[in-house]
Length: 544
Image 1: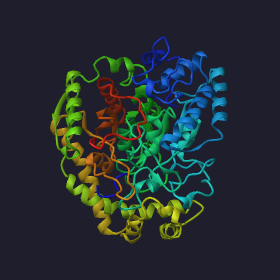
Image 2: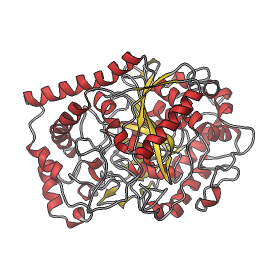
Image 3: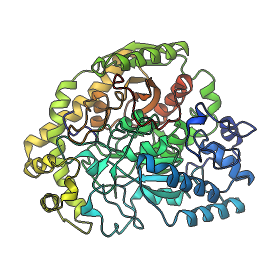
Image 4: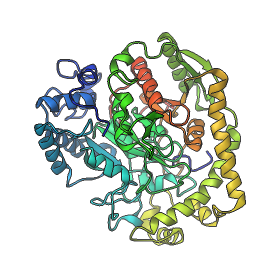
């Protein structure tokens, strides 16, 4: 949650067209501003960790020119040398190199389990891991680890992924104080934006996004209730996908609201994001993004919408995209959206301006509903852990532990949730029913009225200066319709305001995840907006 105020994919390694489509015959070239990167950005010979993709890595592993052990060690070295600047990684896993060695053995036998076999993954620290702490940033959970891995972690391990470690987050996913500071937790301290270190990374998947921007892992897992994947992705210049509700299991993820919570994949490019979703996603019927598949993402295979050859062949031609400008985010962000629209039109897309309806009512109803849902769901989760056993005990814990008050002191949302109506209360049930109806209609009616493939809007303002006393400057309404509706959304780098990245947020209809990722890959290719951070200590006060 960011706005606390209302506001096995079985791509066989022999499927050469997908791999070759993402990989040239030679080593990956260094990207722009290479001279500004910290030592270690090319720790592997011929591989630029900033720009390499999973298909490129898997092609090298298949040929025997790269091992997961070497890749994992390279990322561990970068965490050691680069993370002190940004403070994004809480723990590294003692099992990571052992998992990498097991992957290497599978690759040698020709038994690789799919595209994530041997690929290092960081997990937000509200995703349960039985062999590492899972704290949600709170000292209240800093004791014994959970008894079991989250379902999505089990899926990653079965797919052969290397669980590299855990990332910092906004404590309790930004659902504790009325004026939180995104990226701060009592366990991890403050995560910094890699582009400008005194600027905020946005919450609550702040550590996951900042770690990816700094190339501390190939992919990461974030979570979102409203904005907590897509805003950090936009503000740190990476890609983040909030899946359709239910596509990724929430079992073993510290909750805010079962009606809106979802974990989702984050990466430096859309293809890695999609490949990660294909491993962690898939509902009980086997659907991935509307596909009648086995949850293994056949539409990502050669000939499908994410085949890189198709993306290169004018993937935007004939697409209709509705641009929701949100001028409240300022003229500089609006200028980024204007340039984005021009580039999309240049690629053959039709871009029409839209304003999804019902936004004021959604803002009025969402927060009260979340209070009731949080009380219900956090009590159930705390009952599975050592430490405070319910919300009342958690409130008392914070009152008696001064470390929990070193940045923002308040826990107003906890106190309001404790007093909120039960989820069995008729008034609450009416609120949630109206929220579901209006949020879905907001997207469905807008898309139908303009015959759209997606709605696009700014994912974030320029990163604000981190300030514990003031809290966040974070009224960003773009994420709310898809978050409340349970529809998919995707943030892709769109440009910058000075040094500070701005993402474009794409939204589509229910379980249209595969189609949205395909469109996002085409948008990404056309905008070509990714760049490496320069870790500047600050920027001119004149910069927004």
